[in-house]
Amino acid sequence: MEREHESLSVVRQCALLGVSRSGLYRRRSEVSEEDEELMGLMDRQYLKTPYYGSRRMTVWLGSQGKRVNRKRVRRLMRAMGLQAVYRRPNTSRPAKGHTVYPYLLSGVAVSGPNHVWSADITYIPMARGHLYLVAVIDWYSRYVLSWRLSNTMDVEFCMEALRDALRIGTPQVFNTDQGSQFTSGAFTGLLEANGIAVSMDGKGRCVDNVLIERLWRTVKYEEVYLRAYESGSQARAGLGAYFDFYNTSRPHQALGYRTPAEVYASRGEEPARPEATTASESRLTAAGLQLNLVPDLS
Image 1 (cartoon, rainbow, N blue to C red):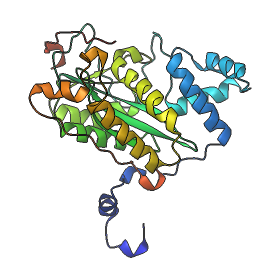
Image 2 (spheres, rainbow, N blue to C red):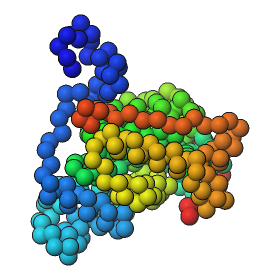
Image 3 (tube, rainbow, N blue to C red):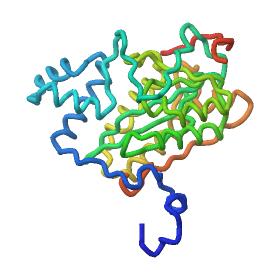
């Protein structure tokens, strides 16, 4: 920020520039070109084999001619937010002091729009560097209510996406994984303040949030991998155009070949189209709910 604006508070300057204050002073540590290449390869493979942990991923990379040790693979997977999917005991490790909520949707069926929403974060590779993408989706309609990009996995860009989604509607249940962004008091507090029941997946159980996991696969194969974004602004523009297409033009077999926007609007009002900004453009009573229909996951 320019020195001549010292008379304005940092909060006000961020508001005027449309950037996240949480990312203002944070510089992402440099990632080598080799690590970026490895992360891109692991991201694609994880979509095919989400049950691969660091050991199997190391072996697979070796079969691709990439001789790396397991410690390095584990570090890169952690940076990307990737974890092998399988049941295991005592694996819930949110940030210290954060509350973990029970999973409320086992055997549940979603009765209509704004019944159940969920959110998740995924890794977005670019030609140089990478970003993180968070999205909020309505389970019944697959409608993407909001999204945000960030160059760090902090809570603020998740909060921005949640606030945007709540301008469109209010769900009965909101489901996430146990990531520190979603177990934070700020995130769960905003949900509870709006009378929303908080639900969380079992650790390493992406099948508990399967609809948004399928969204990531679709977004990456139909948009991200085809574009190889050169910059954050290009990624923002590309993803914005894709989500508009996904919501309003792409028919879904599971929705009777209707679009998510058509199904979401069946509640009697036309949904607003979500918009997004980068988190830092310059650096780039739950148990009593009557839930009735298991969504078609095809």
